[in-house]
Length: 70
Image 1: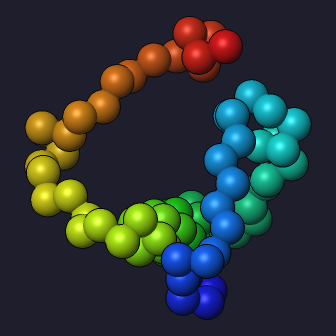
Image 2: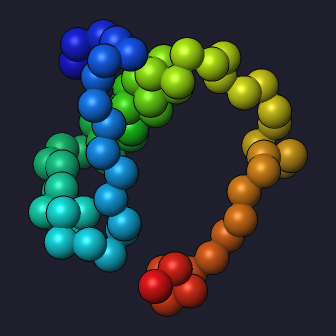
């Protein structure tokens, strides 16, 4: 993976979209997890902001089902 720059384009698509359905990544669970880590690091690098340092227990998240997201 090349190092992202501020000129790199990032595209976000809904999980239930056709584009997301076509984005199947082959490999073992470990390989897919490693890819997710690399993509997350690249995404944060593109923001130009530091990676948050909060704990998993205090992460600001909202858990919803896919049905609620539609």
